[in-house]
Amino acid sequence: MPPKIGVFSFTSCEGCQLQILNLEDEIPTLIEQIDIVNFREAIDEKGQDYEIAFIEGSVTRESEIEEVKRIRERARVLIALGACSHLGGVNVLKNFHPQGSWLSTVYGRSDIFSDTIPTKRIKDVVPVDLVLPGCPIDKREFLRFVQGLLLNIKPRLPDYPVCVECRSKGNVCLVEEGKWCLGSVTRAGCGAICPTYRDACAGCRGIVEGSNIESLRNILMEKGYSKEEIRDKFRIFNGLEEIQNLL
Amino acid sequence: MDVTVEYNDIDRFILALQSRYNVIAPVSKDGRFIFDLIDHPSKVSPKYDSTLLPPVKWIYPNDEALLEFDLKDAAKIKEITESNKQALLFVHPCDVNAINIMDEILAEEPSDVNYLKRRWSTVIIGYECLGPCKENILCFDKSYHIAYSGFDLFFTDIGERYYVQVASSTGKEIIEMIGGLKKAGFSDKTELFRVRDERKMRFKKSIHGNMDMLSHMLKEAYNDEIWNIEEKKCLSCGACNIVCPTCYCFDVVDEICPDMEKGTRYRRWDGCQLHGFCKVATGENFRKTAAERVRHRVFKKEVYLKKRFGRSGCVGCGRCIDHCIANISLIEIFNKVFDRVREGV
Image (cartoon, rainbow over all chains, first blue to last red; front, side, top):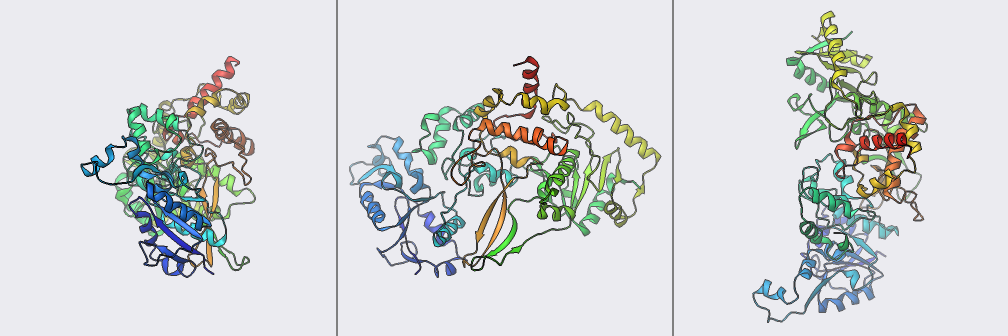
């Protein structure tokens, strides 16, 4: 019996779901091996019987908390899909502004109804079994995760920073050029796609184990970035991570 | 028999080389240089300082396929060894020496079949350094600024023309294939000796200590606090390993086809400076701290490889210094080691 899989979406741009659908060449073979019962961006069916749940998006409304809990109860394996789900994503930026200011900033008035709350990661609401990081996720990594589940092998994420992939490609280092980049403390697996296109790594795959945040902060300060600027760069994706005291 | 190649004849030389080999040469990239497959001689920059990645990576590529396997039948394993006829053009002496070191390491039993097969199909054409290419080099301290072997042809700029030393039968074949090149005469040789003689005036030593004693001095400094100082800076990002021309550690990764029937095993460059490098299956980490890891990198090159092969495993190209954004420098470490041991700390 192919395992039943559900893909669920909370506060996000839904780009990670789209990345799954971007596996155009692999999907015909893939759906022979898995049974997708719930995947709003791809199918009409809204099955509630699934073993494996991928959750995209962060929790930013009171009502989402119950929905996430319901999915957790039903799923044997719960996987956080993408940066919003894993780290809170860019949605966390609102947490650094006064709670009352969000609605008036976005809608021009604050008296409209909304149950908006400070952004939470999925792991802040329910236990998460596995994380598939990235903004957006890497579609090949999604494929490896599904294959791992089918083979009963725990999928392995790279445990080294983006620099390894970036240097391996023979890229010119942005920090060497005096620019900011968080690649040296961020988990690899993206193929260093941003720095390869000469754009800074903003840390969407989360902080890698064994990283030296203080050293990177000192390096960036030597390059002329202020403490606040550096903190803001880390907040793009890692505002809820336990590194704030190091910045 | 050595020959000379006029400056304005170099394009013809490269074009002819391309007819038989994939030519990998220094080309500019975002203000730096890198060894890359060239499509036209005009792309080649013979005068370059250093390259982002060393040329040896074309013999030891990242994500190289090692074997194909069958998930349904474990006995069905197909070994993969690939090699293209390639010519590494204008390789500096430090990098020629680095390839010599890699040859020695990887030919040791059990030999690295994938590396050796690529190595055998690789032609190496050296390019003499008549002065330091940049700051942050230790090649002169280590006498690796000169290459005595490990190349098929070797270019030296003697003004208006290159002196080309023909050092192997393959090199001789290439020269014959290109044809029309002048034999090096007495005046060319005199000029070669003259520019080589001037070379030693241009290089400066970076280390104030006897390099023959370095291995011994490092052992004395094994428990020194300098490693803890480096730890504060080290990002454990592995850049120094990736850009090193004598780092050869790799990890193995499997990729499975979507049909879940077949897969391919690859090797991926790894590095001893990475936090997870010494982590084993049960979770223990044998070099938990960056201090231990930085010390290991230095000891690997200067103590362990030296013990095995009788010479330093670091050719002094300085890439690890140039590309360390935390400013960890072997030059600084070696000088500190000499200072501290001298001071009797």
